[in-house]
Image (cartoon, rainbow, N blue to C red; front, side):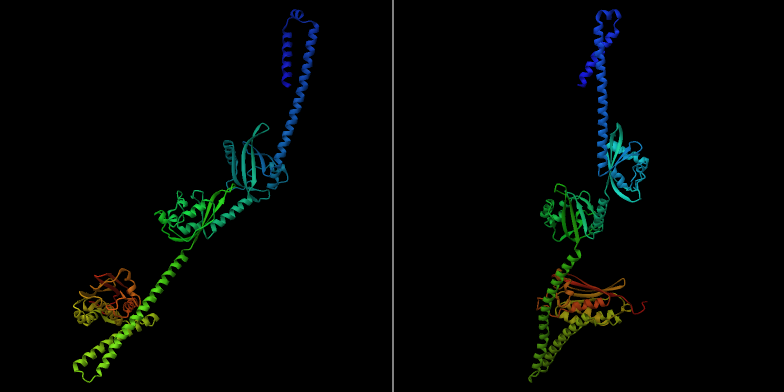
Length: 558
């Protein structure tokens, strides 16, 4: 309708303009007075109609603008978030809604409008004119600018807000519409959650849907000795898969809560550059879901159970050791029964034979010799039992005196020479210190017992060949050796032979007569004297025992 009126007015205006351009003579010839009056009347009526319509349009426009302003104000004030209208250049607050007054603690709107953003800001970054321009420019360039900020109420209280800046056109002018949302409770909850994660004594590792680490707490770093590399996915961890946890990993991806069994882990095995920190862990994994119920994060919680696991292993070892000790004790008791009965039977048997009246002097001497050897053997067994009992009870004492180690070695050589030669063996000794340097301070009886025991064993376990013993001075220690070409010792028995009741092969009843306490006693004596003992051996080739004692000269060396 408005368009038709405008078209008709334009036609009338054209007629009027044409009429005014005519000369009087032409006017007189083309239009009569009646026509002229009609034309002017039509034009006047049309003009009045246009003016009336323009007034109606202006009134409608004003009403529309008033309605739009009213609607804008209703929406502006009804918002649950604070809304500021700011000057796009200066950042000055031009308008604020009712929520903003309440949020910032103002009752007078004009009072708040007089404030600058800097006045109601408590951010450590500060909010000066340069910062305002920077924030507004980001909103202009990116359509909006979203960030978190610390705001300040009229009374000075500080609270956290989320701020959104957006470029808008209000009243035909470019403005910045600022939306402010109070996130103090959210930040408080985040802070509590952060504290729970950071201060938790259990290791916490948060990963994404691909298994890549997003966050770990200090306990995780302390447990594993490092932070997982950025390109490492726990879902592809070969250590977990090697331990048969592939199915559990798939269940995790499906959003299940998964409890892992005890697992061994060492980040060093994953990457040689990472610390070598082997641990046993107990792990539980649970998902974090998005708004659609799909897993978007996974939380791994690890508990260090290394001490418990080692304790369990120690218990297993102790159990096995106890069982072995029981077996050895049983074998020892059986062996001791044999060892004690054999000389006792010899003593009793040949004592009974001595009662005979028809014995020659040679036979009597032979029987007496057998009785003496049996008695010495029995006494040796009893002494071993007494000595190990004293050692175990802590009653064995050390008596330091002057000892000539050269003389001791020569005496032991002379003592065992006939026994070795009787077996068709050679026995040699080696003294490396001159006599004036061979006098040392040590426990003579214990030293003699140690060396005697080792040489006696070497002869006993060697069927043919050579037994050699001696010493060398090394720094402040004397290192003694006893070498034989005997049956040797199995690799898995090298440590066990120094334990109580243990022999190189306790099952061999014929070759290995004895209590099985000799090496245990020797080891205890050596440690009392401040030294150590060890052995090198190969089955079928022979053994070489070493032991050390401190070299403490008792005489001035010239």
